Length: 174
Image (tube, rainbow, N blue to C red):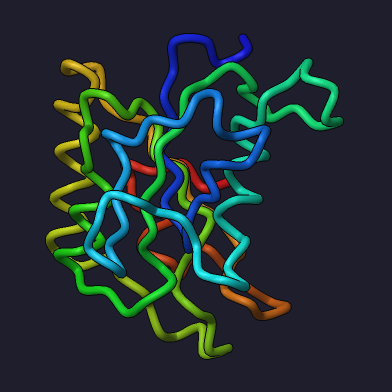
């Protein structure tokens, strides 16, 4: 399985879609920049995490540039979200953007850890509604696959059990 026929939405700090390994499958119609409120999710200077995540997911293989993503023939879209402050509503919009075209939502981010494991991070009600909608009606009723980073809280003892995004029943913690 090389990703042919699959579209992955990279929700992160941007997506350098003009990159040689990413541009062949870039789907601009299914992308959005929630920080600048426009259709171009290109990252700001210094924001390269989303581009790296896109490369791991769907960087083109067999093109003499030396890398190949896990699903190297997949199409990809991007949502620039975490490079700015965002609300529950904005995150929900990114997580359900074109849920018929985007098969997989890749989220390599999460709430920051404080080291206080008695605190539970919960996704807001609109994000939870987006998860449920993706899960039940995305991809023509087959449901979208939503992956979430387990351990991106930036602490040595990060525990994704306390992350309401990574441990939601509709997501797959990676």
